Amino acid sequence: MSSKIILLVEDNPDDRILTVRALKQHNISNQIQEVKDGQEALDYLFGEGEYAGRDTSIQPQIILLDLKLPRVDGLEVLQRIRADSRTRRLPVVILTSSNEQQDRVSSYDLGANSYVRKPVDFNEFIEAARQLGMYWLMLNEAPDD
Amino acid sequence: MRRWLSRSFFRQVSVVLLVFSVISVSAYAIHNYYELRRQWNDAIQSQASDVTNLIALIVADDLRYGKTFSLWNKLKSFQEKGEHNQKGALFRFREITVLDSLGTTAGSTNPAGHPLLQPYGAVTATQTDGADSISRIAPIEFGGEKIGSVAILFDITPFKKFLWVHLRDLGVYLFAVTVASVAIGLVLAGWITYPLSSIQDALPLMGSGNIFLSSFDQRQDEYGRLARAIESADKRIHDDAMQIRMHRDTLEETVRLRTNELAASNKELEAFSYSVSHDLRAPLRAIDGFSQALIEDYGNKLDETAAFYLQRVRSGAQKMGSLIDDLLQLSRVTRIEMKYAKADLSAMAEKITHDFMTEEPGREARITIAPSLIAYGDAGLLQIMLQNLLSNAWKYTGKKSPSVIEFGSFAQNDEQVFFIRDNGAGFDMRYISKLFGAFQRLHTEEEFPGTGIGLATVQRIVNRHGGRIWAEGKPGEGSCFYFVLPQAAA
Ligand SMILES: Nc1ncnc2c1ncn2[C@@H]1O[C@H](COP(=O)(O)OP(=O)(O)OP(=O)(O)O)[C@@H](O)[C@H]1O
Ligand SMILES: [Mg+2]
Image (tube, rainbow over all chains, first blue to last red; front, side, top):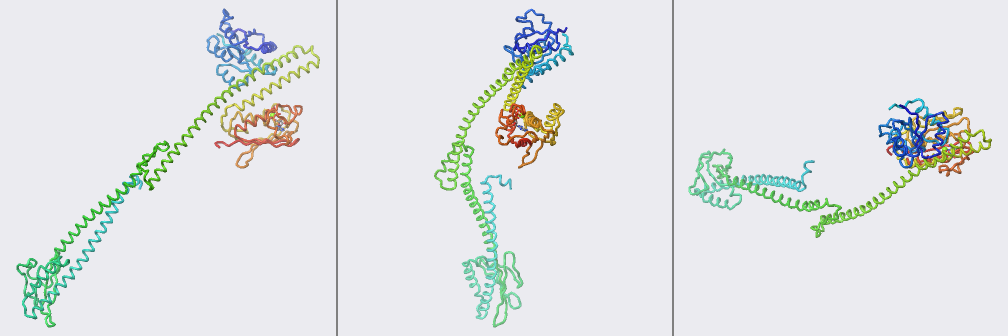
């Protein structure tokens, strides 16, 4: 069963606001769950900590994941998502300002589905978000589990 | 020959000595034996004739004076005389026959009691020499007339025996000389080679500082000098090696320290540039993003100036974003690990310029790229280098129609010199020293936008490849950038 939740893992409040605005502006009306760091993302996905008791059979349709996060960083979150049978098949798009080749290689190694560098140019960012919406929210149905 | 040289020097000398002495001594002995035999044989022959003639004279005398055969006494004394004579002793009378003129036996002697005269029977005048005998005939003359002859048969077995004894003595002599010369030779060879082997035993220790050839201390000869030279060479090598080892140890330690320092600072740099690219960009993104949001969401409430100002804010933020990108690229170009391979510069340039033309389809441009320009280096870095050089050529020919850009190469002093030439704005050669400096620009932002990091990056890439880059320019006419990259396996 597919939910229409987008999980946005982002520690920078500016980037959160701008990302949500970009998604909204492009008519993506899905519920957006915002979490502020890697630990909170994991708690949300596995129904632990402050999300204890959450129905974990409902999982987001897509995860937008920043790499540089306080406490648990993005690469580790990705690793844990891929290691757990409940979340293994969730599409994960890495959202980062990092231009380092190393980050790109390791995130693909760990099973990221796509990689979008957060561009300074907002129009470029919207284009990236639009493509994400196109490919992950509109066209592709996430595999049912 | 190789098998021969594989034996020890001692054995080589021994064999040579043995062969040499056997050959020389036997050659001498054989020569000596034959010469002696020939000489003495001649002597015996002529003496036999003399003796026969003499006896013939005595017989004639006896006949003349009517004495009958006082010969025997004469013969006896002759024989005795002969025994004292060294050569005479080599033969004996076996038979003396006196023949009358008709050839019949006038009297044969076989004097009893004389051991040397053995009965022999009739002898004819034609009797010839035997294996151990010689015969001689001499005429007996009386009054100028031959009245008979004397035939004597000499027994030469003593001579044969003498020769045999001589031969035996020679054999003993040959053997003794051979043994002696070989023995002397061996002692000599040993005397020469023995010190060599004790020196040889010491040589594996060369460089240890432990070679002490004290048994040679008293010797002033070649061996003594050799031993002392080896001792001092050993000490010198040992001392040098110690010094080198010490230097190496300190050097290794220094290298290790520096490597650690370098690794630490590289890591720091990496962390720094990572946070630069991540953290510095975030506020810019907010500035640009919220300005954009203002323009889009509240555009109707802003007057034209406010909208213009917001546009300036945005372009400032964007400019800083690309500055950060350029800076990061500059530092990455220095840090990145190089992977050497053949790189097709022509193909890279084709692709880069193709992208330019699709971005600005309206622009009139004539771009010539020589085919198969091949260099040896890191493909990623060479790509960045060409990207910067060609984008400059493209940018600074933007006000020319048509833009003419050429990428080619020529040979000079055994090197392949690549060049990228354009007919663009050019530059004043007076400022050439600033051309490759970071943030150094020869044109204003209004004329041509840019940050001034491109050529600094290019120069670092060329330097990392161990190559050279230089440029020529003329304001308003164009410029040409030349570079050389070391050849493969050079
Ligand atoms: N092909 C060219 N023709 C004329 N001038 C050039 C050319 N290439 C470089 N220059 C001069 O050298 C300066 C330094 O070039 P460089 O590529 O480092 O910086 P830039 O092009 O101004 O900025 P960017 O860092 O964006 O490349 C330029 O500002 C320009 O004045
Ligand atoms: Mg440039």
